[in-house]
Length: 352
Ligand SMILES: [Zn+2]
Image 1 (cartoon, rainbow, N blue to C red):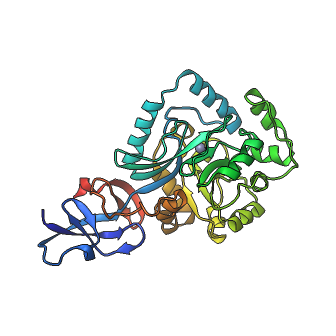
Image 2 (image 1 turned 135 degrees about the vertical axis):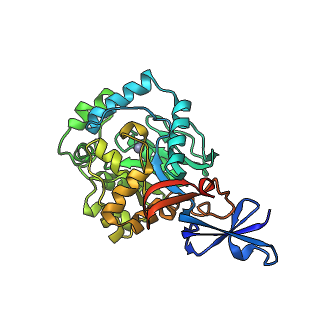
Image 3 (image 1 turned 180 degrees about the vertical axis):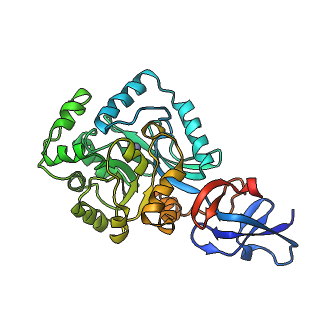
């Protein structure tokens, strides 16, 4: 098959905006890589071509409906569902399907199965193996997710901080109740939720969750902090100096009556950040475009686009994989709308 020169309204190749790319035997390539003697056809796409969205935090295995309510009430519904009617395999397949339809091609997944990284139906998944009450063998190449500071025992966390070599994800500063629990202002979080499932409660000095994470030796470049809506300005300063990154899940936060982190503060402090949907169980619909619009309207679409693409890939440690080159048209995505404010996304093969 001959080489085709591909142009579009705009093309983001994964690291920069380019005027055109080549398609050689169905594979996208930079044009300078191609022999000038090959005969060329050209095609134009009316939309913005890019490698696809990066959903930096989700739980593929939690695809089911739970009603919107405050976090400490919702968590009981979640645990009930997990112990009565849970089908991981079916959930993962449905989540991957919805992600594909909303233009997501890279995922940071919190998984309870030790799957590691894998590629499924064109989506690159980075698996963060979650631990809650047990402690896994730490393999230097794998990625982990201690669930939170309040569910994982502090001694486990100290050991994890010594042994872990890779970036990891943790849910932190998600609700006001969690924040108050560590600051010693209110023990309802323990009485209404934790004591039903865990014997241990926080015995340390009153401090913010981020400060406690720092005390455990876990706040550094490896840390990917999920939520952070109740973090203080001091917490964000600490995160910035530590070189850690943040994933915001604004629609999941809304669903569970929690505040989302103010991303303009993250921009001001140059904290790397990304966008996550969280699992289907904490939102109405698993559609990444909704989160993208929520942030685009708040902070501008250029900034939201950076976080939803290359920024998200960097937060997951997938910057090298985040590219148009070497991919098929099926793999990559076109956004349709006005500039970066899109009404619809589709696989590039559909509009070829
Ligand atoms: Zn989550």
